[in-house]
Image 1 (tube, helix red, strand yellow):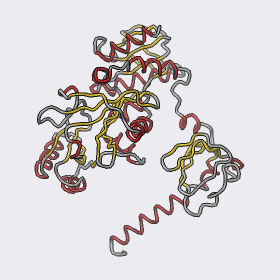
Image 2: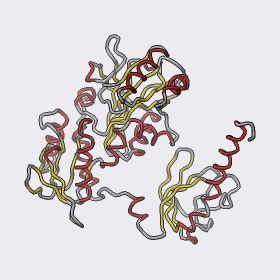
Image 3: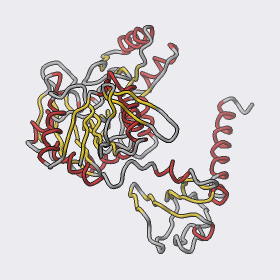
Image 4: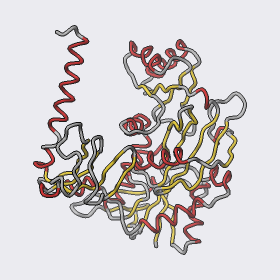
Length: 397
């Protein structure tokens, strides 16, 4: 197999380790400086050059896209995707994880522990946002920071207000996050490859520093995660469609609290703390996944005219409650159930005799006309409830 590694530096620890693991696995490997690619767009024939010269076909690309080159780096990854090269993390997933606001928005609609977060621009809303987070101390984060850069602990409301106002005045977008006091100075980095956590470490800040990043001198120790933390880490990576991810979590009093999901997690800290061959795990996973390629289910299936992919909840009183998937009549109406979600459990390709219960969520593919009969009432009711609530708050006007 021919593997390319997209990286600004061949001597960087993570890049070097991935190259060594690929060679050990019997693969041909080359490290490419991401910024030296030229992208050419032609009808039905996207192409790339490297240093002005054509690039022969590579089976897989492993992106190591730094924060400073996110835009161009993701464009390069996307180009290889269009050319049919398997990319370990897709351009879309890299962009989604790199934007802290975007990633938290994606995670927030799921039943998964995340740090309570606010994003405001209006100066009059700053104090309210801080109060919504429980008041100071709060964490203030730049949207594009990495390795602990742009992460500030504000000890009082006045300090928090001043910091946000100052950063906003120079057009820096910031998030306000609830401070999890019980985890001050330490967090957990879970390294996800595919659908499992291959290693985890606890990072502890040194001295008065509250940021536990290894690049800031944080101490590391290997840790065995319990099921809740493993499940949360894997689910976070899946939501953002990342095949390889570093999921940073705080140990909250009610369980794991996700702070960030990294699409290019460093290997030095985790391999040093655990003694495990994480690079080898990544190469092995790449080998296994190569045959599947980068497949966007929603995009591919929705290209068929009149058909779409959607997900809907089984509301109280729905006529199919208590029926099996076979007897529900869904298949007769040109609807295929791809996945059933119940209480956080995801059941792929559920059996025909699986009973449908109130509160279940069905991910389906089928005729838009047939699927629409399950959706409008739910959407209209939500709109009506929202309108009624607004009217009550306005005194019934």
